[in-house]
Length: 403
Image 1 (cartoon, rainbow, N blue to C red):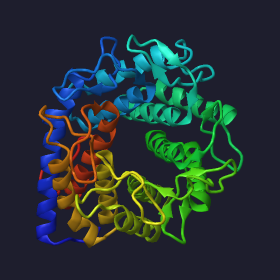
Image 2: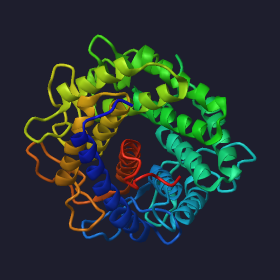
Image 3: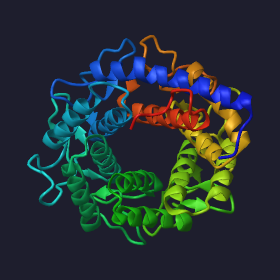
């Protein structure tokens, strides 16, 4: 890694400590205590005062994302009960979120349903590929946290289910069962993430080959080199969708920057040019000059089609900056403290410590009254990445992770 100025390193170290203190002292205790239901699963939302939104329906993917969070926390040594919470969460997924609760990894994967009622009964058992991706991420990280082979066995069956039931024309996978249009890059982005996590957990080239398949979709269809952007919506054979094919999400572009950097690290490919291009285009097209936050959605003509700001997008902006800093980009490194501080100022000012404001409008006003559990996945991953970067820059600062 290129050496950065003393001021940049000191500012990154301070930002990492602030963020890690928030995660370990506030956020993980809050979500461990308030965010779980009586069966060991997770609520869809917390209210502004930190009480559970117990009357809300819960997407199954929320449980998988939270299992990832507490598996990551266990691997890092950031919460004393994290491994138990993650294991309980996976047990809840098997019992309540899979279409056959007897699944143990030895037989075919039954598919993960989509939605639970407030009493945890399955009320929508359609298979959504996006949700399956997070099941894979959860099991991969739970194996890393516990070393238990059963989670890799379950993941392997779940990937086989994707290939057997959801393989799509032109490569990749369908949106779910029943199939629907438009096809989206988004589930594939999260499959890319999950396959790389499973490769890191198992060192099995089977998963790296799956990640390479998704990377091929990125190269051939998702990335539009003439504009330097990531397209979101497609027809059956990956042609841009005639209605929504010109829409882009700056937050997803940042998320892909981070994922591409990880893929480059695992494969030895030089992807810095495309990462830098997409990062710069996400900033140019997506940053609201009034708020300094990324718009939720824009089009290729420069219009903000969703002139709002979800909080997860800034965590991905931070992760993309970290990825470029690791590749020696001093300008991206210098932005990291300011992005972290902006995240705290814009979103981490909720009344309950460890909570957040999830969305602001184009003028910067808060427009949400709930904290989605699904967003914690973004916050905790970004915190881990920043902590790791700071540790690599200042090995004596005692910020190194323990995993």
